[in-house]
Length: 480
Length: 99
Image (cartoon, each protein chain N blue to C red):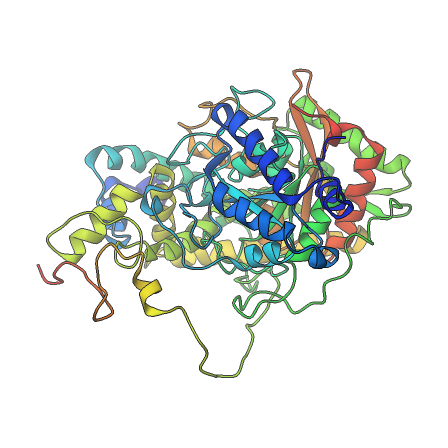
């Protein structure tokens, strides 16, 4: 039997039927075989991975307490890894080698996971197609002429192509869930504060959250279990206790109330996407869930509010890339010229657009009209969700309004690209946990995702319903 | 307001953002930002009188810890990624500050 899920891999190593080294080598072979066509990985850290695997094989006494024993994982290239380049897929950090591991990396490694490499993404996670990588676009394993979504497109493609069972992404406005949907896998954005952001290269600090992309909900639960919990290095990480997520996967969803905001699933949503969504809701109903109507009246403004808030925060966060302490430096006579030239040479077009937009909405005379106003409407969007989550336990929407689009189709129209996030950004604005689980295919065999959003810190219910859905349907087991 | 967004605005904010844009970049970016701002104009119509702004999604107010001296990143490591550094004296080096 092929070892594919994290659970199967750890059990097989404990049973002695394989070793961490064998599993690691097999993953490296799959990457070598398939990465040229897909470009899921930007960096493969074979040496670090094999020495980590050998160390695990040498210490069998520790195996029983390592929940991710020998599981090969990929990390989005905006997560810091000691001694392995971390580029954010930007020229400005092309050769940056962090002196420390992100907290999530420390925790996954301590749980027995083996880091095999860093995945491609939109530059500084700014994008919805992975075409904004400074290096090369990632291809969708289901259709090589299409994008995998983004910005965690390399992580989604690596898991969809079965190179690794688990990859981490970051989700600021849908960057885990949307590529998971477009690549036919599971993607979870935890509650804001559930997972430490220490060592994640910051894009928009009030929205960013790290989460797993996997082929099963159980693997997403196991990964979250290891990553979740307060961290003294991230003051925004939450003290809330971490429940047993695997124990929550009972398969039982009778009387769970699923809220459907019907007014959002209409114009602008692809017909086949809508059909898979309706069928998905019907599946949940047949399993005993109660389908209820909910209204999210301010969600119509979620995209402009998101881009106003996110770009403002980005313009501030990216001020640190100045050619002084790390990264690229362009030669210049004076310090000021050095800043200007380094940032012009180091940042790509989308990053510049967002830094400029964010600078504008924060600048004198425009702050109240744009940034403050957006933060106030953010409050209204958050209140809509709070109210809806009193009458429903979860809110269901399609993850993306369209299946994966063609490479190049939207690169010349930034606003069209921004609309790809129409169903995902609200969970970030409200800080809520949200998952995408495969819910069908279009007639040309492109995957579609069902998005389930829950109450703050209630990942357990999100995972339980997604797991029950996965068990009741064949879609997550399909492969490119 | 967005209809007024011009190339001069792009030049002004590029200075604030410390980005030396080429003329071609300015030509490309001006209509792109202008069209986003026109689209974002819809938020002006939302009634927000008395609504507090959200800057943290879950309303957290930060956390406290004791102010104790603890080990931190060694200076050599902190300097290891600098484009130019004076390792002996523990300094980042930059071009002259005054033009």
